[in-house]
Length: 305
Image 1 (cartoon, helix red, strand yellow):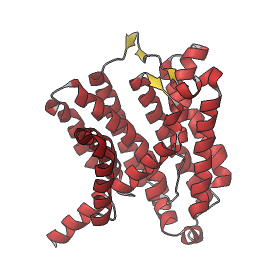
Image 2: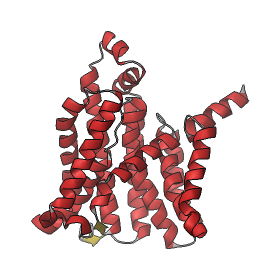
Image 3: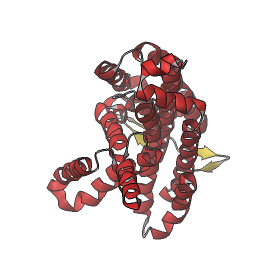
């Protein structure tokens, strides 16, 4: 049911857009929401904190930039290659760092994200260095994908697909095992859950979600810089998860909407824009402590009783 509602919203939303600018904002919402869905699977369901998830966003972004310009590969192929590369990195790095817990795990993932950002900044021969590099247009069957309205349907359809996959994963035995791990790793071990394997699996899947989102972001903007993989971007993704609601797939979209749309709406306040954004986020977290979606669902359920 939630997937159908989201799909209907994606289809009908353009009817409310008065200009192409709104298409662009919506595309950014869908792109970041896709990355946040993956991160929410890791944080909200498996209970594993990642403060370096933008590193995978950067791997995906630079895959569609470096592959075509340096090796002459088609961007669509580089998109899949970036997802595979991100999954491989997450698998290899995740084996040792996912043995850590709490703030130790958070610092380890932070180091991973910083490492990726440093590599992208220093390898100027391949990545253009701090100034970044241009990204070739996505070409499908001889058709060059351009325009915010076209990207709206591509990003929207991809988000709905990722949303459905996440819901199915959570309803599977793996999803139930992840929720058991979130509640208590010791209890999950006692009932026979392979905790290490499940955590590594969801970390890998989460990284691939972020990589695809990063590739879309690079292809859509046509330009990319190492800031895509920076620490502040990782914090922004975590904030979207927490604000929308940890453990809520719908909350991933809501969190992305708030932190993408609000800064655009607050530009009319000029120098007070950042202060107002911080104040609004604080109010949300004070009165909706479990995140926007879980808090509203709980309040609605309480009223019905």
